[in-house]
Image 1 (cartoon, helix red, strand yellow):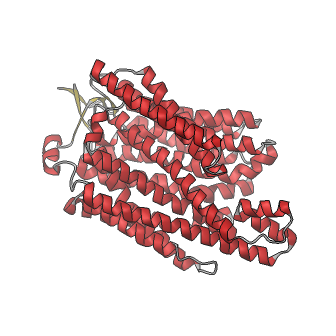
Image 2 (image 1 turned 45 degrees about the vertical axis):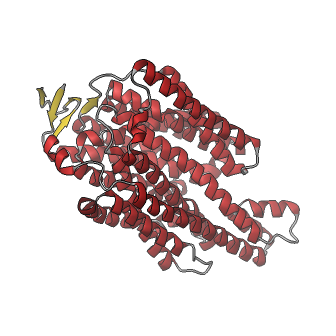
Image 3 (image 1 turned 90 degrees about the horizontal axis):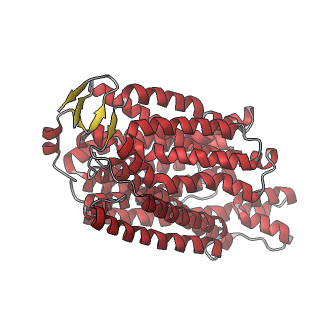
Length: 528
C-alpha cells in the first residue's frame, strides 16, 4: 500500500477544477448538438432516421459502457483511463466536426459516447479518494455546477457559432476544453486504483451493457414515438429482463469468486440506496426545466437559441447560492434535512412554474428558475454525497458508475415520460379544426411545427391555439415534476440517514492523507 500526501490542499482543488472542466465538456456536447440538427439535415442530407441515430448513438454507448468503465478505472488506474478518455473524446470531437456524411457522424458520435462513458464515472470516483466527507459536499457542488452550467451555456455558445460558422464548429469547441482538462489532470491529479485489482467479468460486462442499452433505447423510442409502439416496449422490457439476469449473474459471481462487477452489498446501505434514488429523482425533476423552458422561450416567447440559453442562467446563480448554503446546513444538520429542504424548494419552484401563462413576463420565470437552482444546490450534491460516502476507495470507480448509470437511465426514462405527458396535454388543447390534413399533422408534432404552419397559412387563430396548448402541456408537466419533488422530500425525511458516517471519526482517521495505491504527480510518495 502507498500513501500520498498531496503537496497542499490547493492541489486537490486544482485537481477538482480539472474534473469539473472535463464534466463541462461532456455536458456541453449534450446540449449543443440539438441546435445543429436542422443544419445537419440539409448539409449532410441526413434523413429523420439519421438525425435520430446521430443523437441516440451517443446516449446508447454512454449508458452501456458506464459500469465497465468504472471497473476498469478501479483495476488499471483512474487517472490513466481518464487521460485516455479525454484524448478519445477530443479526437472524436474532431471527427464529428469534419464528418463528410451522416454515417461518418454517427460513427464519430459513437466514439464520443465511449469517451464520455469513462469521463463521467471516473470524474466522480476520484472524489472519495481526494476529499473527506466535510469537503466532498463542496467539491460535488463545484463539479455538478460546472456540468449544469453546460445546459444554458450550450445554446448560447452553439447559437453564436451556428450564426457565424459552419455546423462543425459546435464540436470543435470541445477541443480547447479537452486540452485544458488534459493538462490539469496530468499536473494536479494523483493516480489511484484499488490495491487489489478487481476481477474482470466479461460476461457481466456484456450482460449489463446489453440491458442498459436496451432500457435506454426503449425509453428514447417511447419519448419520440409514444409508449404504444413495439419499437419502444420490446427493447424496454427486454432490457429490464436482461438487467434482472445481470443481478442473478452477479450473485452467482459473489458465491463463486467472492466478488463481482457490481457490489450488491452497497444496496444494503440506506445512504447509498436512497442517495442514489434521490439524486435520480432530482435529475428527473430538473429535466422538467431543461426539457420545457427552451421550447417555451423559443416557441411561445419567440427568442432564438442564444436568448433561450441566456434566460436559463438564473438556474446557475441559484445553484451556486444553494450549494454554498447547503454546505453549512449539511455540516450542522446532516444530509437528511439538507436533501429534504432541497426537494421542498424544488417543489415550490416547480409549482410556481406550473402557473406560467402565455403572457407571463420573464421576471416571474427568472424568479422560479433561480429558486429551482437553489433547490438543486441543496438536494443534488447532498444526495450524491450520501451515496458516494459509502464507497471504499477500492471500488469508488464502479460504485460511482452505478450512481451515474442509474441517473443516466432514469433521466432518459424521465424525459420520455415527461415528454409524453406534455405532448398529450398539448394535443388535448390544440385546435386544428378546418386545417388540411398535412397542416394538422405538422401542427400536432410540436409547437414549432404549429408556429410554422400558422405563419405559412397566416392563421392567427392557430398560432394562439398552439401557444396556449403548449403552455398548458408545460404546466401539466411541471406540476407532475413538483409532485415528484414533494415525494422526494418525504422519502428523504423517512429513509435517508441523518449522516452517512461520523465526520469526526473520518477526519481523525484521514487527516489530510489520501489512501489507495496512488502515485503523486508531484513525486511526493511515501511507502507505508
